[in-house]
Length: 226
Picture 1: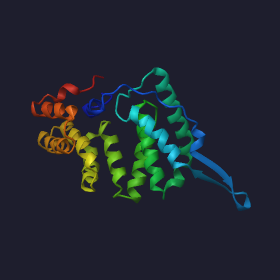
Picture 2 (picture 1 turned 180 degrees about the vertical axis):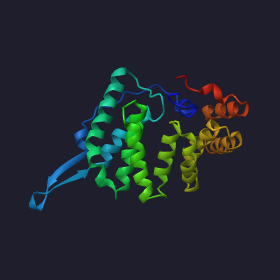
Picture 3 (picture 1 turned 135 degrees about the horizontal axis):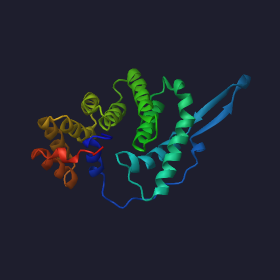
Picture 4 (picture 1 turned 90 degrees about the horizontal axis):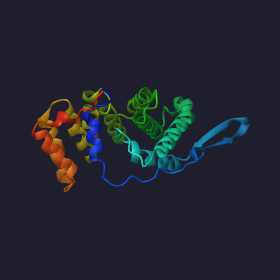
């Protein structure tokens, strides 16, 4: 099974608006190379530029399946994600004490995974594991890693990270946590989190419909066919 019901639920949860065009970017803008004393080179990262690209890709590919306005947009996003990975992956060993870059690297490869880019899943695991080894209480790291795991075959492994993100004050963790519990068959925990989230975000019909499906035991109808 390519993805579990969690992915479909995230897609249903996405705001139902007409897809906007994916942007045009020069990925070389995310870093600059400078030469210091003794001829040594250093790399400076432009995090706002990187975040802009990741944010745009994420608006289309944070859930599975990705949603783009056109095939050309998706292809351009795939080229950008692969290109940024080619720039950052060789430097990943230097990110060992830089949680911000590890977080972005993990998210980059999460998007690559959703775009079916080969090897992205392992790279996402490596980046998030490195991040949470040095910063176990990183709120965004726990949320992002939990959401990534929940879109793979390791839904049960996602729950501790999403629970920790929730404990650390990430309100948004309640939705993916509820879906992860639903995917593992714990209807009580699923409803507890989904209903709490619904109270914080009233009027969202997608969440209301998901809660109704969980209550009626119809959640299995969202399974993805092989």
